[in-house]
Image (cartoon, rainbow, N blue to C red):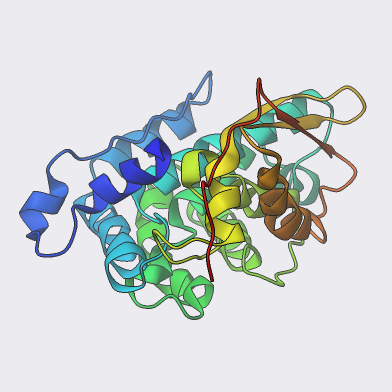
Length: 281
């Protein structure tokens, strides 16, 4: 499972020093297009050792201490790019972001909200997995304030920070996104499932429907939809991957506010791959 191994490699593994864990640092790359604020934001992020250390700490909690899937910089990079891509597809379809509708801000500002929420959505796991969405709020607060004051007036920075914090807390299980941007982050988080990168916790190396279905997801792509704004295309090597979509994606989409805008297509590519040879209980 190449994707899962990338996340574990970024963690470094037990016994590694902080310096060793920073070696091979992963750079955040988010296509800015003509969005100067997003470009400057990504520059800030890539120069921020404190933020990168938080991503490492949340990954140590997930991988080294709880034996879960990757929640570190690889996950953050994937979710951020999925979220920004989804927002742009929605805007291309004429869907209005909440910061535009409610505050008269720009589409570029909506991209900043989505990118920041994705970048910070799991930082609370640097403290604990339980209720990490709530912990993420106060861990992110001061970092967001410093980053946004370099891009906005105090009043605008306060609004953007509030929108980001809402998107962070709304990605939790049972969360209630009240903005388009929050719904996007909630769904993007659920779509980091390719190559064994399931968002459903399961014992690493264990044999269960969780691990088998996770191994079946080969790729996730976002494209303009035929009937709706966004089409999520899931490529599978085995139909067991449907479990991931039913247990995770469907539940995250429900209540996200994006139900009218997102369609999903899942298909087994080529000959169906055998995922297990034998199962004994």
